[in-house]
Image 1: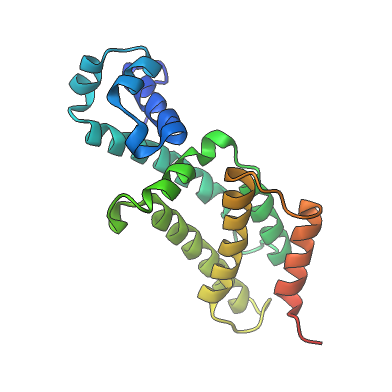
Image 2: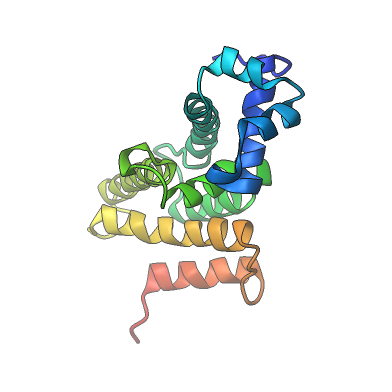
Length: 196
């Protein structure tokens, strides 16, 4: 979909996401959205009919954009090295910008407020799990790793990525020590286990 970033619709959608990030679902009013976008409330209702529809359009717009970035982060081919892939996935995930992560912030808040099937976080997690599972299946097929449950391997990687995104980036809780050494330690445990 070609997006006109100067259009009134985009300005309203952008203002909505910004306010959702700042005020949450309940604190984001059409009056605040209109003020932030520089339009009247009448314009919002003329373009989107209802607040609920606007919230869905805004969420889906950013969700689709975010998923494109996720696809790029988790892309691989037959020649992708396992260690390098995991390092790149980690670094690119942690390097997502605040604007990229607005949809994640909204997804965390909506965990309490909307039906499960409409939530962004499970859709995002399922997308990553699928990509990682396919990657681990390919690595097993090529004889690069032993036979494992690829879903469990994917879940381990997703957990560490979500920690980097949610705890470090969204809640601004930095890891103890250097981020690169944290990744090295995780990969050491992931590849070598903990038994002597």
